[in-house]
Length: 91
Ligand SMILES: NC(=O)c1ccc[n+]([C@@H]2O[C@H](COP(=O)([O-])OP(=O)(O)OC[C@H]3O[C@@H](n4cnc5c(N)ncnc54)[C@H](OP(=O)(O)O)[C@@H]3O)[C@@H](O)[C@H]2O)c1
Image (cartoon, rainbow, N blue to C red; front, side):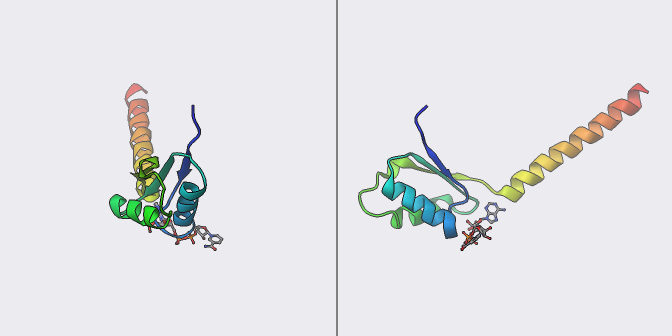
């Protein structure tokens, strides 16, 4: 598999600058994540990446860490409650 880079999050701060730098100084395809407006973040990254960068190398995906953690926690709770119910039913 060809190498590629992931920067998460990349909407501002260190992640934004790292994403721009990777686009400017390497040929790697780049996946960047953000939890807000993906089109806006994509433009923000490309604006600071410099002229001549192939825009097709950049894909911005949605990731809200708290949302993801909450969803996993909810699934775990459902699993535990289901397990307890099955235990209670079979004993
Ligand atoms: N800057 C420094 O000199 C420095 C030095 C040492 C350590 N650090 C640490 O390095 C980290 C990044 O620093 P930074 O200066 O780049 O911070 P920043 O400018 O405040 O950026 C924080 C980034 O985290 C994202 N984020 C926050 N909560 C999130 C969530 N629940 N799900 C997904 N993304 C989330 C923000 O996205 P949104 O735009 O959507 O809010 C933003 O992209 C911090 O933990 C900081 O303490 C920074």
